[in-house]
Length: 380
Image (spheres, rainbow, N blue to C red):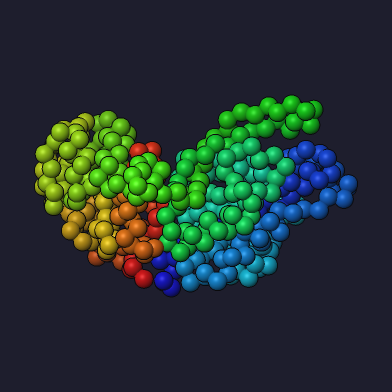
């Protein structure tokens, strides 16, 4: 894939002074006073180098990757050292502060970053919680701080790079909600670990097949689809219209609800009751009006079309009315595995809409089990 809309857009962000107080015994790096004292004691910042190590394996994969970053030590230096072309969106002050990290993170996501790779510690993770708010863009931490009690980090920089390479190559990578912990540095310096839950971030994790169901070392498709349906039903929102798309996977949701289903059509349910069956695009818009609405879709196994094959009821107008965040994809690992790393494909007939739908999407693949998978405009 060479078209920019078919690439993984990676945001790269470094807190240059993360961990600077660790080697000189300060047990933290938060705050300008601590940073200045660490440098006075001869500390050498390591975050830029650690991000370079994480990015080193991606230079050969630029055909499937676009990189956005921030200037100088906040990302650009690491990208350049790793031989990875990147577009810098801004220049940091020297030295950078927490506000600069938050501002850069928000700008990278607003510019289209589909995954944010950051180098830092718990303080940096806390800044990302503040910056991203309710945004569900996944993040992955390259460990570079003194305190890393949060569950958002790869085990080392190289592991972060391997996980990203798997994503670029079309591998199945799970998506988890991970906790960010806020550590009291003053208490930590006094020998007490006082941490509290600060927030949560979505984090890609190494794909582990058969997390939910095992049988002779192989995923059992029927059982996994049953689990997918059970999770969907458990998370149905009240007073919300659900557009149940065509296909056997979403049909199991209807079966478990005890509702009739149009296998090759689109039905609308609300509060676990069918309100309209086998509807077209205009009827969908008429029924849902301005009320809360979501869509439940699956993909064509082996082909991977998400929109444009067998579900044209999801017209550009319907898709825009829903918005990307209100479209749930249901597919087992086995079904995704038949794509052999190729992306899911959108072909709505509206080129601008297709481009806006490209990127990483969460795919419900089991009970409390979600994967990240790429959506593109072609299957190359």
